[in-house]
Amino acid sequence: MDLVDDVAAENHHQLRRLVWSIQSSYGRLNLLVAICDNWKYRDEIIDTYEAELREKGTRCDRVRIDLRQPSLKQSLQTCVEQEPELATSPAAMVTILGVDELLGLRLNQERSALEQFLFSLQWTRESLRGFQLPLVLWLTPRIAAQLADQAPDFWSWRGGVFEFSQPIAWAFEPERVQSQSQEQAPSSPAADPADLQQQIDDLLAQDPDSPLLGSLYNDLGKALTDKVRYGEAEVAHITALHRREQQLGADHPDVAISLNNLALLYKSMGRYGEAEPLYERSLAIDEQVYGKDHLEVAADLNNLAALYDSMGRYEEAEPLYERSLAIDEQVYGKDHLEVAADLNNLAALYDSMGRYEEAEPLYERSLAIWEQQLGADHLSVATSLNNLATLYKAMGRYREAEPLYERSLAIREQQLGADHPYVAQSLNNLAGLYDSMGCYGEAEPLYLQALAIQAKTLPENHPYNKTGYNNFRSSVHAALEAGQADQLSDHPMTQEILRQLSGLE
Image (tube, rainbow, N blue to C red):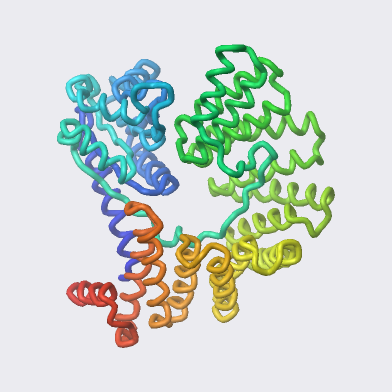
C-alpha cells in the first residue's frame, strides 16, 4: 500500500470512529471534535456521514455559529427552538460549523468574534447539559490548538478527536481563472480595513443615509476578504447589499455587484448553497438591465459556472462557461485575454470530467493568446503551461508534459523569485510527473527543494506543508518498492523516511 492509500485508509478509519461515536451517544451530550485543514473535503465528509446516518433513521441537523452572537449555547438553543423535534428525537445529532469563519480582529468591539467564542466555551460545560445528543464540532488545526489552550475545561470533556487529512490528489487540480466585475477586482495596494472603517464611522456621524456608505461597506467587505477575515467581510457585504437595496431598489446594477461579491465570499468559505441564489439573482438583474449578451452577464455566467464546477455539478457548469465564452468572443474578438480565461476554465472543466481530447485544444488556444498578448514569460502563461502539462500527465503523455512543467517553473522562478510558494508548487508538479514516470531519483531533489521553500514561506500548520511531505514520502516509498532506493541521496530527510519505511516492511 502506498502513502496515497495510507492517507485514504486513515481518513476512512477516522470516519468509522466518528460514526460509531455518534451512534453510541444518542440521547446524551457528547462533544466530538473533528479537525480538517480543507473545508471542501470537510463538507464531503459531513455529507458522507449524514447520508449514512439518515439511512439508519438518525435526524441530522447543522448549526452555524453566528458572528454577531458567537455562542455555542445560543446557536444550539436557536436550532432547538426552530426545530423542537430535535430535542425529542430518539436518534439525533448536530454538526456545528462556522468556527473557522470567526477569524476577525476586533471590529469596534472589546473582543473579536473568535475571542468571544473561545471565552464563552470555557464556561459552557454545565449550560450545555440540556442538549442531550452528540455534537460534532468542526475546527481547523489552528483553532483546535487555540481552543485547547484558551478553553481547557471545555476541551477536557470532549468525547473524542477525529483528524482528517486532505487527499493528496487534491493538490493537483487544474487552476481556474475567476472572472471579475470591475468592482470585484482587487485594489492595489490593498485597502486598509481600519481606514475604511474610520471613513464609515465618520460618514455615519455626519450623514447616516449617505449613498456613499453602500460603496464604502462594499470596499470594506473586499478588503476584509483579502485579509481572510471572512466573518467580518460577510457583515460588511450584507450591510452594503441592504443599503443598496433600500436606496437604489432591488433591481439596480449596484445591487447585482453586492450580490455577486457576497456570493464570491460564500464560495470562498465553502458555503455553496448560500452562494448559488445570490449568483442567480445577480445574473437575472444584469440580464434585465444590460441584455443577455453584455460583458457583465458574461462575468456573472462565469462566476455561477465556477460555483457549479466547485460543487461537482459539471453538466450545469458547461453551458454557462460556453455562453460566457461566446459573449466575450463576440464583444472582444477571439484573441482577447478574457477569452483566454474563458477557454482555460472550460478546458479545466472538461479535464475534471475526463474529456481530455476536448480540453486539449482549448488549453492550447488559451496558451497561445496569453503568449501573444502578454509575452512568453508572463505568470498567466506559467499557469496555462502548468494546466496543459497536467492534462498531458493525466493522458499518460509524460514526455510532452515534462518541458511544459519545466518552462512553467522557470517563469515562476524568474517572475516571483526562487523562494515563492508558487515555485514550490511547480517543483511539486514536476516531481509528481517524475514519480509517474518511475524516475524517483529525479523527483527527490525537487521535492526537497519545494519543502525547503514551504518551510520558509508558509505557516507551520499550512495544509500545503503536510501535502508536500506526504507526496515526498510516497515517492520515497515507491522508490523503495521499485528497488531504486540506491538512486536516492543521503539527505537526512530522505534517509529518515527510508528508515521509517524499512521498519514498517
